[in-house]
Length: 243
Image (cartoon, rainbow, N blue to C red):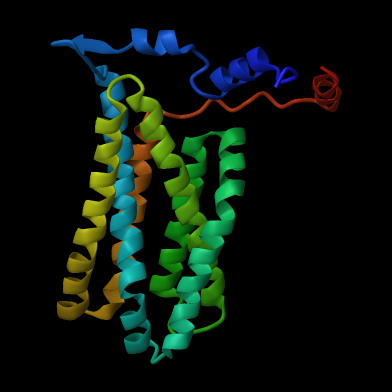
């Protein structure tokens, strides 16, 4: 414990977040009736992030909940292939969590989320116009969807947490879970209605529309992103190891 460079690590943590101290964070909050409120511009960013996560789950969960019925109806595919696709997506998401966190620390959370959304959008467009029969390529598609799921969920919650430091952490993170869970409840009903009364070929276009819409609010969010660290040269890395 005596050899831990505490001051250096604290400064690095400040640089990774907003690049400002906790005291500076608190000075940006607004106090109303003895309670801290988010400044208007920060609240707008929070709403944008919540809109992104809501739209994400509206699209993503529509596919994951209805894919088995879709595949057996449209492709006459066996349930073993269907379950393997979903298992691949889950497995890739799990193994992607740490790499996604590292990527976000290098390029920022917003950019990582946008990358994930674009990947998911490309997958759902392929599912809508290119996947007419079951093929092993669908395993690749669901692997990419798993990566996208990790990119979005790993980074949206920390963005909300960063923003909520201006006000009430529990309150605003509660908003996050309310939006995500509400979307997961609503989308099987909405997409299921379309599948039943319009056609099964609406599943992937339905998901693609919501994922495309999710890109807009996250781009407009101005707060909650981390500050990517400055690239460290080999010489600086060696000097840091000697300290």
